[in-house]
Length: 65
Length: 462
Image (tube, rainbow over all chains, first blue to last red; front, side, top):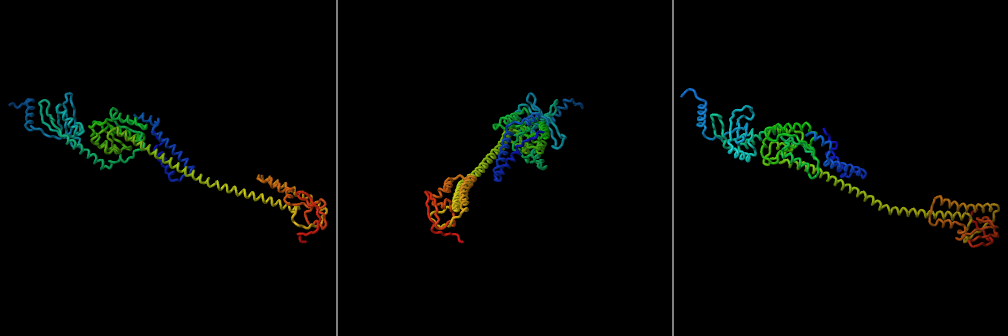
């Protein structure tokens, strides 16, 4: 059974979390940089997931038919 | 007449009797258990009656619709009900009883009332819906949440159905470039095999439900007939129990089947389903963009605020620094003045006396004077060099440092009005060493004088 190692939904939750923290103003400048980097990384991965075919999933589906 | 009848005779008697008893047309309710069309276009049916819950057939008869009549009735029926004449349908038909000595009894159908069938179908459908509601399962699939990014799709359809290829083309050709993973699990989508096929497909998918985000049941683009196969209680029930959301696009414009009603989402056509999936992902991506923009904006603001903080502090710092610098300079100047004053004191103690000061000098001292003269010179020298050392040790470079040294130079001291008094070549620094009538020499900056002591006055109390 193919397991999604990167879950779009979990990533979304984490990204929204980071946004919440930034909005609160609870982050100092140093943490801000770290969190923004993390968010940026997650967003990139999400977008990749939408458009780049993941071979692992693709081959599983081909077998199904 | 003989007691014996020929078969033909018997049949004809039956025929005539039947004709006498039932000469007219009669409207009859029956269920189609079989229906076929032959090469000549005639329609042959088997009609039955049974209680819906019973397996046993109470009555059965053959029926026929002659070809020219059949063409008309067929399309008439389909237009109104949206269904073709098929097995399982309950119909209300106008018949004429015919009996043929060879072929036996048959009912010739001359007319049909589609409204009856609609009513029957509606009743059947209502019963199914009621049952699902009473069992509490009607909304179960609707309660499942569709994943925000539904990329992995299980499709129940027929490979040759136009709907399937429309669906796949639409998905793969989406203008956003989104990727979908699809698997087709085939089933008949009309006819009596529909129920078994769809349920079996659902079961196969349920076994691997972890692989998929949802199931899509799609069928034929826009055809109106045969929707009632999806009014089946069994299909609908399986959909309600399914662990993934089920979306239907079974291509019916007028009506919805029970399966449509219990599905998570029901749409009109396979293309509409494809659009729905693409739209869902687009929404999720928009949310990503929004968050991205939000993060950028807020971060920018935070950075701007901090930059302002720094600049404000810098602006305050510069004048403060200047003030500090000036204070230090002042302190330094004071130190210089102190050094000069100390120098003055030393010079005074070394025996240099201002010329305008009146003083009475005491009598001379013998060996004491020699020592004093040497030590005086040494002290002056020491003072000068230790001052120089102190200054250089402290590494003070100031404007006027040379000035200071110049000030302390005995020649310059003389220039400022100080004099050196000596007796017989010996420098006197105390009046107490002189006595009346001593001849003393006084050194000025520009020369020497000789004078005689006339008066002595001591500042020291004896």
